[in-house]
Image (cartoon, rainbow, N blue to C red; front, side):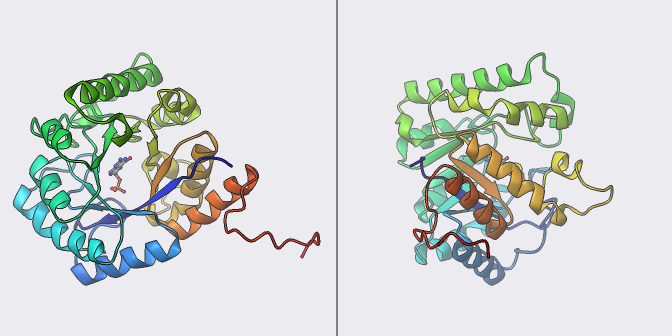
Length: 280
Ligand code: PMM
């Protein structure tokens, strides 16, 4: 048996996320979409209220919370495991209060000086993503001598810092931050060397879904919403290489791809070994 993996279904309650902006701004539509993703095999719903697409500006924290908190409450009431995608400690605190059990911070705690203390004081899990600055500045920060070494040592350092401050290591999840101050070549190098991140110990989360470097494999002009097949294949390869979780838009396709990986490793993903040896 290989270790269980997690699918985080993306729920962007934003008007401007790069592939699904505006689709789930309405609270009922957002909840319906989340329930559908859970039915398709999502283990966690990752709710975000602020777009992190390259170049995006910041929004008021009050607006972020207005978008996110009612949806978090509705999902928790339905028994769904919720992660909140935020760099603001006050939004994270309010989401935890509303029942979220994971804080997914694309800055890994660096954007808000209050975040580390909040995580120390809570019992939420914490996604520490590799980050080099806010979305409107990150394109200029995509310079590395050794992208894999620099990302791995950054995450190792941040994890150690959080553990020294009092965070139980079991609560940490590491994420290389694909597309955040990284160009296509950087992203593929990080994917090619996921084993180095996995070797650090904590579970690793990868978010490749629909990102621009995936689009680079497809005919020019293919819309982000049509990047789901290569995204699911990347998710499968990442899980094959030992990552714990993938953050995705198309849960159904990803579930199928991860079921192939489970079968490849000798697990029976659906608990039904019905194959009687035929071809049809
Ligand atoms: N990518 C986006 C947003 N949040 N969180 C984590 N942990 N990892 C990611 O790679 C990540 C993230 C941007 O993508 P989106 O606009 O499709 O949500």
